[in-house]
Image (cartoon, rainbow, N blue to C red; front, side):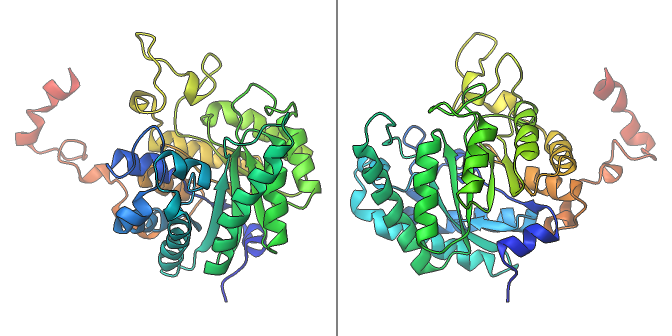
Amino acid sequence: MSASLAERLRAGTMLGAEGYVFELERRGYIKAGPFVPEVVLDFPDAVRQLHREFLRAGADVMVALTYYAHREKLRDVGREGDLEAMNRQAVRIAREVAREADALVAGNVCNTWAYDPDDPSTVATVRAMYAEQLGWAAEEGVDFVISETNDYLGEALIALEVIQDLGLPAMVTMAPTQPMMTRDGYEYADACRILAAEGALVVGLNCDRGPRTMLPLIARIRDTVECAVAIQPVPYRTDAIAPTMETLRSAAGERAFPIALDSFTCTRFDMAQFAAQARDLGVNYVGICCGAGPHHVRAMAEALGREVPASKYSPSMDLHPMFRADVSAKDAAFLHSWNA
């Protein structure tokens, strides 16, 4: 029998890999703007392939591609009638690939854009959206649920209640879009403390910030809570001037988010360093969010001391004709122009 989430967390650092929506948009299967995962029904093999690439790179969890597969978003693209089929299919694909390497399967919900802390009527709307998505996920068979990219603690607590009603373990992460607080006024560490007190197995942060600007926030969370902590930044070089990917600008001052972020992308070496830093802070679930590529995940796995299936094809620059120690006389003629 596969080890549970709790057992794996006790055994050592887990590695998560997300960013399915951004990666599949780059590959031509998702429309930027709505970012609705229609690909689950239209091109299921593309989803299956990306799961498999993340699995071979070392990911411990296959996350069902149900991010934004909720009623509010599907209505925007005229596919509300595909809601159940999309959610069920996403879990089935994730479960199929997970069985290839004993990975866990996570159901997934995210911010709905329907929640308003000043409008109590939205609570029932959001709860209903989560209940239908996660009800189908539970029926299809998931090991736990990730509720992520939560801007409001209030919305995160609704998701946690629904997850618990289904008897599933919960990982709940906030999106650190604002400098220090959720949109409903809670410090990120305090929000995570409340979520832990309400029964979340794992709490933490995901999305918006790159490693450099997310690590200081996660250190405070790690000092605040006793439960497992998760960190899943975006692989973009954010800094004090532009702490989130949404605030990154080109040299001409143009907004880079969401489809002109390429020049800000972290290298595999950046993400490997991040993974080791997060582990050393005592983070239990180290992952990556929007912008992730399998090469990032593999480098993170190797930084955590693992050899994974994709390690067979990790770089060996000593085998490159121009970088090996014994460059041939013929090839050495190129070195001057390469080093100029």
